[in-house]
Image (cartoon, rainbow, N blue to C red; front, top):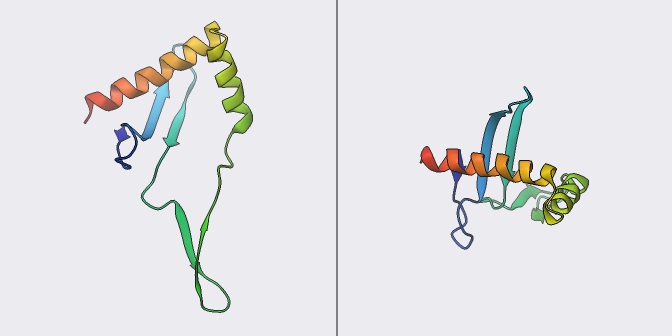
Length: 95
């Protein structure tokens, strides 16, 4: 499934996917580039409403490896791109 939340970005900006690879590996992939509520609001001990934005704290090393593989045009990077492309194609067909 794909969706388009932030109209200032090109679609899709959200991907949710369940996949099964040829080698038998299966998993779940979720990517959210934009959301309707990027800030978290809460009430402090003083009763004041406060908002906080939490910076990216995800899979930094994995993203570095992916970008490295793709930039070096390795077979591993090409396979990763093919999986992402299949997710995008599947999401587009179900809209």
